[in-house]
Length: 219
Length: 335
Image 1 (cartoon, rainbow over the protein chains, first blue to last red):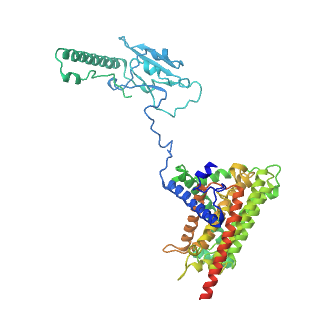
Image 2: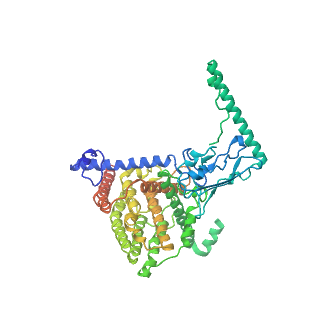
Image 3: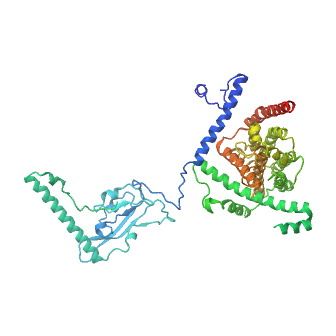
């Protein structure tokens, strides 16, 4: 009842909002017929308007940065594009669904450890992000793939697959050592910069970068 | 081309040549029209809803219908055990064949018609009634409650809407003074010819509404009513039987729009382009309106449908007819 009074301006066929009398009936009819053109105007506008369809296999959507898919290894620029997994097993140990398997080995003639196997069973992963949080070298990230498909229960992501053509062990060792040297030097510089202004406070000391060579990531 | 026609005329005679050439041309028209309309309808449906419609096969998906037809041809034709076999098989043919006769009557240009009959308009509407019989035969012989309900609805709807259709056409006939479709076109062309859309706008509106209802299209698709009756009268039809019903539906759309273009839009009349091209353009403009109506308006309930015909369209078309007759008489007396 209350709806009828609020909608009285809009003629709804079948509802008792028709004005009475012959003149009222004619006016109602004319108004009803005019509404047909209102509808046509809406659909015509849509007909000419922008189409929202994404032609999926031909054009793929760009996912937002917050999108979470199976984890992947970050490739570092200062490591010549390879990852920095030291096979510490922290992710494997913290994973609540036991879906990560990491095996590693020391590089020859070195104490540095390096992953030789990094497997993720994405079908049990809950995307909680604990492995990302715990990773000491920040070499884990969420990938942005959304059209992965497994065809059986043994569907396993091999995170080392993109790094199959990594540099050989001696070269890699050189890279890692160089990176560590650079890092240490940077830390030293930062400490020196911090101690120097303690004697005489200088405003430019604050502007010197505290950490010129961060671990670097291509996120 | 002319040599071929001469040879044909030598062996078959003038009448035989017309029959042969006309039949081949109309068969082509029916096929191309159905394929184009199905594609066009899906495109418009997509566009209205902010989608793209078919896009995969051919440019803008133009080959989609062709592939659908190939798929349909490969389907098994299932004949349910309890149907009335003879009637069941005959029904699609009865529904489709009048379309050919109706198409042969349309004036595609001033003098381009396959059969030039004095009472062409009347004949077209008469054949329309025959096609309804095909629909009801299919519905009845299917031995299916949904089909039967759909068939009964189709009959009552067609009876209701044939009246305003005829009455609105009669107003034009009064103006033109002839039932011959060619002469109706001729009355709109020439020196001081005026398309009847100017003289009879109300009749055009009534005609379009009634024609949409006659062809059982949304918003008057009560006989098919997917949401209530599965598929209405063709529920039990598969494969080719279904395809023929489908073909008939799209051919009737072309026919009612062809008659509409003839009665109200001057047939093949127009500048620059040749007559048949103008005719086809006008027909497809009306078909576009029909398609837009389908994707714009909500469906009518069955009682609303009947009310619209009996309480509104028929009185209105009667008033229109009377007014036309009165004005024509006054003009005649005045001059």
